[in-house]
Structure formats: structure tokens, C-alpha cells
Length: 231
Image (tube, rainbow, N blue to C red; front, side, top):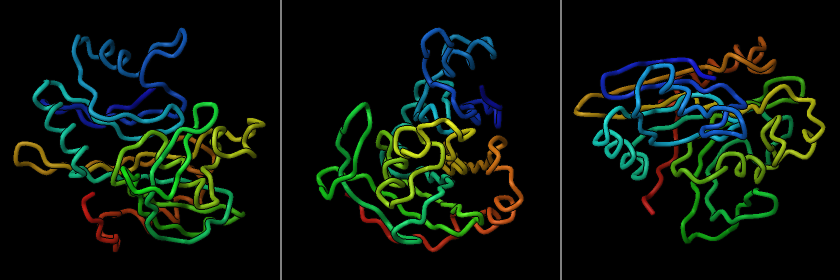
């Protein structure tokens, strides 16, 4: 269900496997409970979440005051978050920033609108991956439900393997959803922390073309990201 990345005295950093639910899913134990059980602890505080489809880095706090600090940092956009994704569609533009309100759509999905009341904000870069595929580096400044999946669909390049937003994948042929929480950077108690985790499952994430092209994005914080005003 997950791999331990860092067991710090104040927090845990884990890399979640794809297809794992954060909370209990039917008869399956959720990720949160599984980690507590494995570590033999009763209390562990979540500060952000990932969709069931999405793999990669997650932070858990060990004490309530640390949970409050980290949660506030996520809300105020002080935590740097970088994701990688693959699509089999060509985007409307190769890089840029997508800003818009998100509203509920049908069957538990969401859609992006042109509204600006409480917008989701995402910047991205992309490059060709060969065989009709494209690699995306995504930086979400907000944390809306399904934000990156909806942004990718709005670009005309839904995430490969996303059965909700990529109609082609409804037949279940894809081996996973190709969205991964790649890098987290934050400060805590005056110290700076940086974590990176490449995906370790999925045919396309393990391909030679991916491993070659991901080098372009190995230090995503050094990319020329646009300045985003606080909203």
C-alpha cells in the first residue's frame, strides 16, 4: 500500500501506491489505518490527501501542533508540491498556468469553469515522451478535489488511465492512473525539508523514454515558474 520515505520524530513521509484509498474502502483497510497498524501507534494526523488513483508523496504529522503547522502551510501555499503525469493526448498548449473555479459535475466528477471566485491554480510544463505520449510536470498552488485531473482534461490531455476523466480508458486497458506526487518541500521549526520520489510502478513510468525525459524535471523548483499572486 505504501513505502516509507522518512520516519522523522515530528512527521512521516510515505509514498502511496496507486489504487490505494486514503480511508477504508468497502472491506479494505484504508491507508491511514494501515500505517498506524504497521507502526503500532494509535494517533497519526493527516495534513493533505491523494486520490485513490494517484501515487506518491504524502505527509502525516505525529503531533497535533505539527499537524496544525503543516496544514496551515498547505493552505497558505507555503508547501511546494510538484506532480508528474502522462497523457496520450496532445495538450492545447505545451506550458502555462490554468486558473478557474471548479464545480461539481456528473457522477462524482468535477469541471473547470472560467470563474475566479475561489479558483484552482496550476502551472505546468510538458514534453514529448514518444509513441504518442506526453510527460507533464505540474505545480498546483491550491488543493482542490481532483484538481490536477480536471486541469489535464481542460488542456485536452486527460491523465492516461483516469477512468473518470479519460473516456478512452473506460475499457480498463491501462495498467494504472499516470499521476504521481513527485516532490514536496517545506519548512518546519526553522529547518528545510525536501523529498523526492519517482514512481516505481506502471509500464509507462518504468519505460526507458520516461527515465530519460524525467531528467529534464529532476529539480522542478529550478524551472522558470510564473509568479502567482495570492488570491
